[in-house]
Every structure is written in structure tokens, then in C-alpha cells.
Image (cartoon, rainbow, N blue to C red; front, side):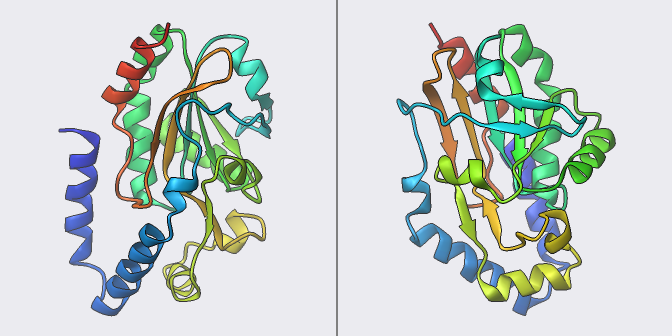
Length: 215
């Protein structure tokens, strides 16, 4: 089963557990985000990847320049450990981590959540790659990925107990679009996946193909 088939199956099973009024708020927010043109404003192939320096779940500080000095980088943005779709996607990346590193690339995942949340996620799913904290979403903004939740959806997330005020360190409304970039050693984006729909993610097989296509 592909990653997106797994995500779709999870979504369909989960819908039966969510009240109709909440489903409608989620549907409307998703449509508004799709109609906003946000994905079209995100960086894409050919752009220079904005540099960043961010803390990792294990207490290190990693910069894109340091990562690129070792080889290509697979950079993926996710919403947070509270998002079940993100957890499924990160587990899929972990399953392909060895194949990514075999191609000389470094995989890093970025979310707006605090380092403690990233560490819990890393330990829970036994992630072998670096998970970085972009509190305030400054890096996501540089890549054109950051957006603010509408009031009614933010209220739903509060009701569901996601506690974004805490896990995002006072930035509860701002999240990144799901996105994955393959960046070559020169810092150029060579492959890009950006979606407004949080239920759709980059397929690991496509990431591997993009790495294989690098010069």
C-alpha cells in the first residue's frame, strides 16, 4: 500500500468518529486554504532553499549549510506530533530512511512544535532522522508554507485537546502546509511537493526517484 492510500484509508475510517458539524468546519477550512493560492506561493523547483538554523529534538543545533556540506537534503515539513496524518507520514519516511541515506542524502523533518514534543515523537516512532523545531514558523514562512488556522477550526482543535498554544509555544494558529523538498548540495531545490490538503503527502518512492535524478 502506498503512503497516500494508507492516509486515505485512515481518513475514511476516522470520518465515522467525527461529528458532522466538525467535519463541515474541517471541510470548509480545507477548501478555503486550497482556494487561497497558498500552495502556488510556496517555493518550488529551481529556487534557492532559504538557509536556516534550528534546534533538534536531541538538543543539537543544525543548519542547512552544515547539512548540505555532507550531501543532498530531503527536507519535510509537518504540522506536529498531534496530527495523526503526520505520524503516518513520518513512519513511512522512517521505513525508507536507509534507502535515503544510501543515496548520500540527509533527511530532516521540521514542525512548529517545541523540542520536547519533537523528542517525544522521535522516541515514540523510533525515528533515526533529525526532527527540528521551527517555533513561530519563521522557516516555514521563508519557504512560503506558513498559514493561519481560521477561528472556527482553531476552536475545534482546542476542543479536540491538541493544545497548540503549549506545543507551539504561544503560536497556536500558525502551521505549515505539508511539503517535502529535495535540495542539492548547491542549495537548489530540485524536487518539490506541496499540498494544502493535510491528508496528502509526498510518496517516499517519489523522493527516492528525485534523489536518483540528481547529477
